Amino acid sequence: MIARCGWFSFADDLVTLLALQRALLILLSLVLAAPVAGVLLSWLRLDGQALAVLSHQAETVMAGYAGQSLVLAGGVALGTALLGVCTAAAVALFRFPGHRFFEWGLLLPMAMPAYVLAYVATDALQPSGPVQLALRQALGLGTADPWRWWPDVRSLGGAIPLFVLCLYPYVYLLTRTALGDRAVQMMEAARLLGAGLARRLLTVALPLARPAVVAGVALALMETLADYGVGAYFGLSTFTTGIYRAWLSMNDPVAASQLASLLLVVVAVLLTLERRAQSRLRFATSRNGAAQATEARPVVLRGAVAWAVTALCLLPVLLGFALPVAWLLGMLWREAQYGEVGLPLARFGEWAWATFRLAGLSALAATAVALALGFSLRQPRGGRLGAGLGLGLAARVLSLGYAVPGAVVAIGILVPLGWAQQRWPESGWTPWFTGTLLGVVYAYLVRFSSVALQTVESGYARMPGSVDETARMLGAGRARVFWRLHLPLLRKPALAALLLVFVDVMKELPATLVLRPFGSDTLAVVAYNLARDERLAEAALPSLAIVAVGLLPVILLSRALRQD
Image (cartoon, rainbow, N blue to C red):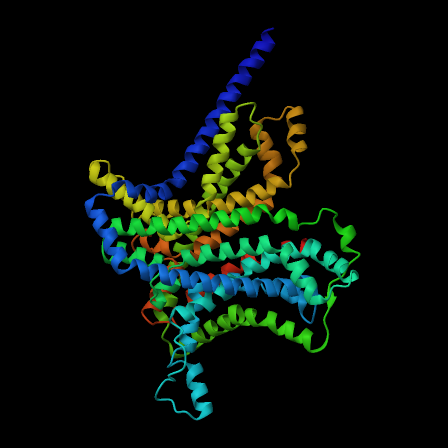
């Protein structure tokens, strides 16, 4: 009887401890979602002055922001869909020269940030650049005057292909995964029924991959709308550049919050579309395994058609990765020959250390949060429905962070702090988050904790529940189950989460520009500032470092695809 009472007392203490842990995790998730709530709550301060600012924006700049953002999003959506679907269908459904290289080579442009590609395109294609000069000399048109018909790369029309080259891998990756399981055998069945190749592609393969295409395009659009580097460098009038103009140039936090909230609504719509499309991807997966796959083979292309498909797949790899990297190396070599890169080379170690410190701290913190939340979500709820729903809702709120642009995160942190400082001057909250390491790491956690959480949850999804049940039957406690059982099995997903967050932080520009500590520039900020000052050759070194680190998740994805 005493033993039973002791057991029930221990069980009650354990339930209390679990409830406390879940409450802390829910609170942590809500803290990470606070910047988004801060932007939305800015409409509660809609007084007469704020209404005047809103009406002034509607009369002057709002139409331009909406128009350019819409054209940019439409062009990127069409371009990424066409290029991603064509390359994915070629690799998944056909065999042609070089297809084994393109299986992973088409992912290489993911390592190239759009703003780095913009710097390279500007240096190469501007009127005084080597490409125009060489063409004019070759055609005997003279070198004094630029061509009137040559398009200006620093424009909306120049930004669209740059985004397409950097973001089409989202569509390619999801579409290839959707087509790779069942499309080949279903196309073979359609061929036996007498359908031609074009009909098999249009009526069998592509409808099968439609949810994947929608999800990939939505991800590409969220990245496009969140971008600040390309828009600011090209002088575009998008919502993201408008937020920074209102905040930094006009010193108007109300206008910045209003623009940020509008952009947040657009991103929420895209996120909803992406989630719905992802939920339908299960219809595009094979349930019969490799048995059916051995009965059908991809179509082998020959002759001119095969080489045309090879050229189609080679073009985005060359324009989106190989040629830009070669151009950056050439710029760096030319400047080193003339001895004009002494200052960047001397300070490169300082910039790299600042970048690696921020990225390392953020990656470790995000992975720790993801492991704690993933472990708690895996535990049985013990009949406590409210705790389960609360924890699930907290995970859902946390997963929204990656879809929120860095500009919105920065505004969501600074504007509520400014209001709090005005209301409670003695609180002293603002110095903790403005221009400090804590503030910028907090912004990174808001944006990228969801990346780590999704990676950890994918690892937990491959771990059968019987493992936990067996450990509990053998008397192992929760701490021992996590440290001795889960963590070794989650070693690869945890390392992948750490790496993905590290690379995302290295490439993050908008939030870093506003929240970074004084005198602690990252490689992305240095590359942007040097390019803005037309010191493109000096921007080559930090840009190359960002691209080199960005190759790491591409290698992980390539290995995962080969294993599948």
